[in-house]
Length: 335
Image (cartoon, rainbow, N blue to C red; front, side):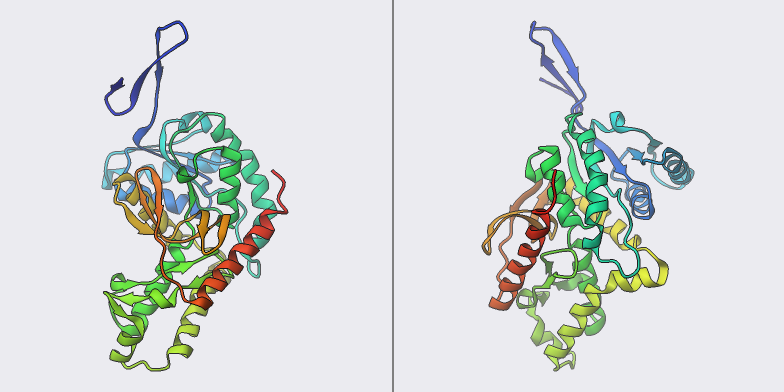
């Protein structure tokens, strides 16, 4: 029997009631308070989605400092409790955002981070799992596809409740660049980056459109006729965006923080929005048991169902190759 939103009465073996916290639907936890974690925490505070947020970091002082810094701005925002804590404090969190991990350095690919960040996840995810957290696990640390699959295996949670930010930001970058190229509102651009969040990512050009108008048609309407050259240039710009930013300011964090906020919005409001998050794929384009990004319906229960977008032959082959490269890396990881 449920009491309010958050309390559930259970029966113990002797028949007496015991209390379980269940899920606090207005509580979020952020694990890792580096640039990405603290920026995400700030964006989530601004969103008004939550009334409680717990920050966790291996450096407790860092977590406390970030919590205080954000909390001091609350008189200008909505009421909220923001604290630094430990894993016992996040048992009832509706969403647990994991950003902890080594950052990407200039000249380093996301896949170069594998060994370092898998080791970090081997210390974090079991702490969450042993407390039987019932919320959604949102993986943001890179390489996000590998770490999402690692989190699924280490947690033992249902796959719908463990997914990564994936190519949500990459797709936003694509929409932004196409909007600039065509001089139209980026929110009217519908286009996906799929596959790995990394060097083998694929632009699904064959399904791209602007408010229902095929991309090639609207390009010509706006005076652009060199489709092959332009699409190649934009795809490369999207893929290299993070490297360009890292070379200039040594880290990327605002764009991904806004992506985290958007994903949390979709979950908390049960929007049933379609997002290209990283999740374990089963049977799409011949891919089985590999975590990568494809559009899915996301709601209060996490990943609800895949949206099988149409790909041309070249895109389908590239997607399978992306999956194969990720699988080869996963096969080298001992958990």
